[in-house]
Image (cartoon, rainbow, N blue to C red):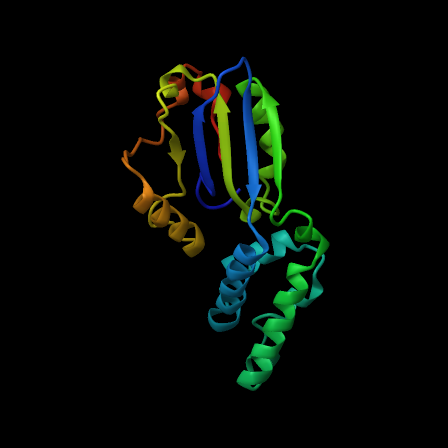
Length: 199
């Protein structure tokens, strides 16, 4: 599930009706390409096992990822190395593991408990790095005035990309408040156990 409880921006807002609706928005091809370049460079330059692990989770069938960070690759000339990285990134962008997800969205609806269950397939290490944002809308009276709650990846997160996302979101926010880890979604009139998300 990632090193932080919240791995993607999760927005919660009011919508009339009896059911809640959650939309999972996947990163665009351009967004994923930017992150891939960071991950591949991080593995090549720093031999970072976290970045390599993230790539291996998303692309479990890619044998070429195992070559990254090896002595043979590090001994290549810089232009050979960059050419290999560029080719690898192009191949990863077109890989079936991600190609059909990029730029798309998935929507689920139901009670908050139903939504929690329906979102579980997106929580895995092979999927959450591809998600840009989750929007949850529902009959939450406390938000009926137009307030949008946003759960962000932790500020100072070890994952540089998640940290940048949180920083950018906070720059655009009208108000920021911090909540202790154990506070539940009671503010929405829901028991925390029913609607505790950890994407």
